Length: 186
Length: 447
Image (cartoon, rainbow over all chains, first blue to last red; front, side, top):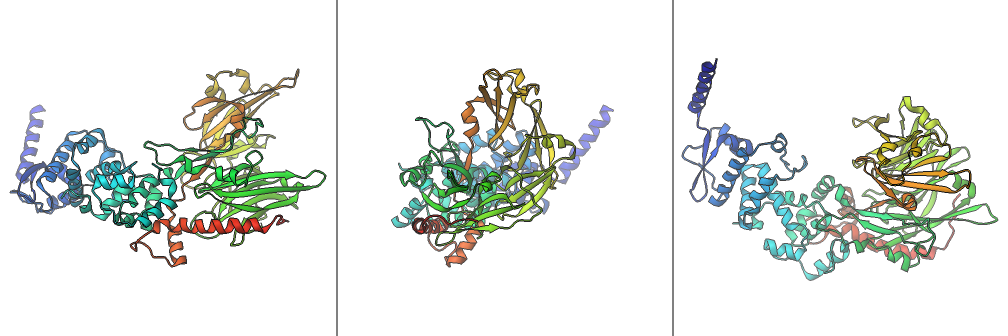
């Protein structure tokens, strides 16, 4: 029995290995190469899943010209961490897909993952997640950015996000007066 | 690289949806025009509203202990829903403009209903030596500090015995309730049928008119309200509901096998709203058994038993509790259920002893969903009813469209403030109308 089973598994693995490798290689805009589990990439990114299914994966490194090496490193890191964490069924099916499904709070490790990023790295990662169709990563990074806005005055938000104020004084005064309840008098 | 300006609009939209509270959204919209245009898009606002229904309630108004006429009499006041970090300046909801303008006197007037960001106040007067009965009403919007005095309803005192109301309904125009678009309705049994008196505002004040209702619909005992509807027990198994947007009536049926709970005299049915926003009917039975009925989630007009609460079990640990309270054996003990908020009731027990006729009362607050029970002051128990107040922003999507066409105002993308459209109209309206109404004089007599 046991021998038979072992034999079966080995055959199975060999078949998979023959068909293709279990990782894919991704190449950032600045030419750096990253390896990521094929299973995780296909599960977490609709774009990579499409490329894998369509056979447009290059063994020498699939070009992702829109994504810098730092952001791609974070993407790969996220995929690996996600593969290692115990994926709850709820989490996998929780992508917000813009509008319909209710948003699921980030898990502890996801929170830590985005908390350690600099602002610049976070914004780059949002763009990468959006480009690669990684809905869960997009949720988690967008959640982080929304947390950075909450409870801040317009001035503070502009400072944090380096936004230029293109309102006139009169326009701002108008908003403040009409929606006064939303503002604290500091 | 590494810049929020590089983030595409649809991703910013996702970020703004997660802000959850209107005040956060308004702050974001006030930072720059690009963000304003994303947020002020009617499609985005309606999505935000549908995903973030709960935070649109800013807090609730309470009448305070109006039963206790003493020097320590407290005025009606606002209690904010308080998330962290705080998102609303509670002082903005103050009612002091009503006191300082002498519009209402906080002793004799009380809040009788709320809808959207509006509060309805009323006070009744009976004239001695005259069969006349009179009710004065004021509708106010605390946030904009505007109010509207409604011409008093004057009628014969028989009317008020079978009366239920007044209640606030949405106005005739699309776009939700506001100070220029609301209705007030009173329902009464007159000349062998139920009829309504409806107040509709117009530019120079507004007027009361008769509101004819389906003669088949009975509205015998007012049971309570939810955000969506008003409910009456029509007798037997029949329940009549009035939609608070359209004023249309519909009927539903109580479960078949439970007639004895509401056929028995004095067993009043109450309606409350669950935390899911759906209506619940509360039926008290002897022995302290409280039954909670709900309409089936799949739709339908037959109420079903959702849960049964044994009051002796939830109250047993409270100070002052006596096992005799819910035994159902003492004729002299009466149990009342009073709905105070979503899924919250107070249960009061009154005991009168034959020896001295003194009424002893004991009350506790009960959460119908968690079954958490807490002892309350008997006066608070009855008067501590929450009148929820919603934020007037964001405007509903239909409001946006209606306003845009009605005023020929540009939609998104054209500089400022689509954000402000609704509020603007309200401000100009409020000033004009308040002045006009004061000038109208008294007694627009009804019926």
